[in-house]
Length: 296
Image (cartoon, rainbow, N blue to C red; front, top):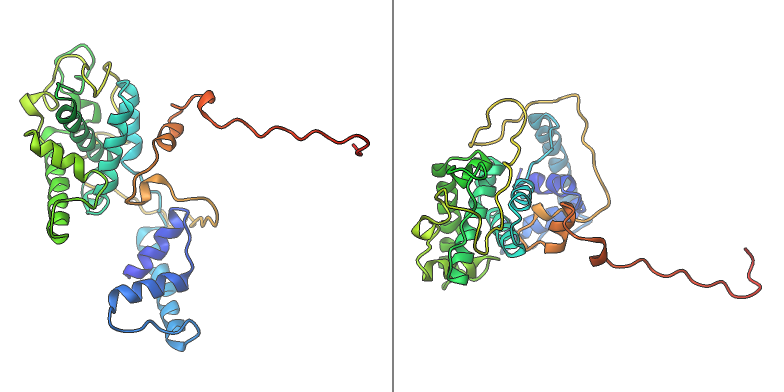
């Protein structure tokens, strides 16, 4: 079933892989001391049949509902609404990337994960710049708390922050040293050196705060729009069955930024939100001049 999930996920995220390659790589991970089956062997053919059967059953259980909402969209919408800096957006983006190594995305709503990433990014900038970098209150011009923009309560946000930090600690323990294998491992180390430790120092990031000063933001903004259908829930994502829907398999295109554990380019993140101006994009290639006497 794990092999089936990887095979289906590669198609959903528009990075399709050959079934043979997925099976062989999974086989190597599961059986370290055993050679994988030959590509033309009967054993591999049977494994292919099993995966295809499991895929049909998995799609039936999911109701063919493969639309996945990542935490990147509400994060970018929030950063844009408060006129946040590029550093704030990139660091928070990296925290979301690293959190995909855990089950946080299955336990909490995307907007809650976005709020935790924004809070940790603000704490890091505070430790790096050695000055307050609070997230602005919401609604703007009031004494409301910044996390109201995500419609997430402080307890939920702090739970996610703790889980992300535990993930860095476990990774560092397994590697035999400090947490140096993930995108924002250095950021976590710096936060702890300066006493941030995930919670806002002096209450600057988690409190209501005054204004949007510092390196985190420049002005207060609007709330992240919650999903339709009543009051949002912090826990999980409700999935409704839609058995009549069909699975759309794409065979082209690159991986979306939310699917991997690597660092997504800042340009890509901002291009999706319309942040990059035309002057920053590569100019079109010049047209070649037609030689004399060339046909029209």
